[in-house]
Length: 96
Image 1 (spheres, rainbow, N blue to C red):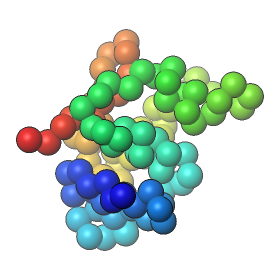
Image 2: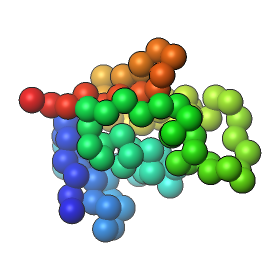
Image 3: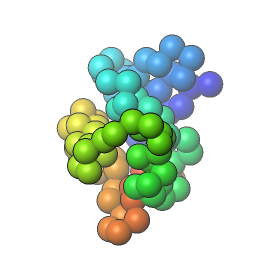
Image 4: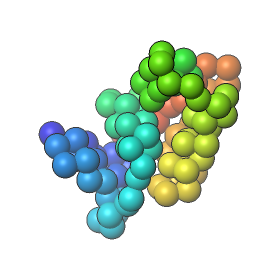
């Protein structure tokens, strides 16, 4: 099922992503993070939840790796796409 939001089209079946019709290359972690934030938008995702999703319990990750992935997604799409909820996590706003 195609996920569409704010000009982004994400196809979970093929893992292809486009922005305003143009293909966007994402790393596997960026894809996983974007998919989670868009499924569905409007939910605050805690930092712990996202780190668990990306790295699980067995994989070591630097303390700022999540912020780096968020930064890359903002550069590839829009700085307004992902909102930081201070002390909690991240949010992709619902479009009305």
